[in-house]
Length: 174
Ligand code: ZN
Image 1: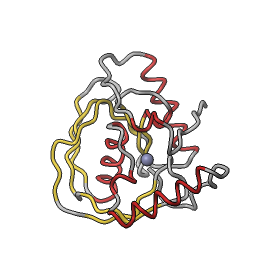
Image 2: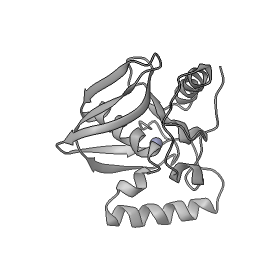
Image 3: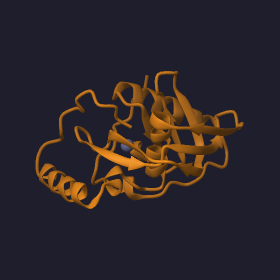
Image 4: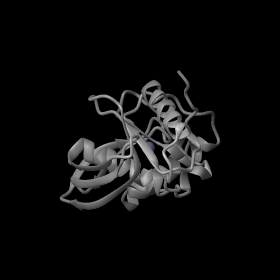
């Protein structure tokens, strides 16, 4: 089992959009495998490639039904509204109630090159939105309302001056 270290808030790689994958070769398969190991070890329910420093457009997730890999994911439709207490492996130990669309339609391809088209809502839909955001270089702190963001930035600024934070306390981390 190979695990990566997970890039933390403040690392510029988390702010950069990722490149689409044009060829599914052994390196991509190996990357996905190691990302799944990293996600399970964290533990988390989702992990985007740039969270482990790789600027390619793929994420892995496991919401209790076994690990899955999505290459070149895009959300083509979203609707509704749902509030969920959201955390992130790159911003450990913190979470906020965040409002986002409830239903999403995710498209992409799997490791065999098959087209994926998944309609998801609630928890699964939230994981997809969170991971696609990562791949576009957007962190969950950008999804906070003004008051939440002000408070979050103050905490994160203070934390940047201290030692790395403790592990998330059992919250679902994406
Ligand atoms: Zn995250």
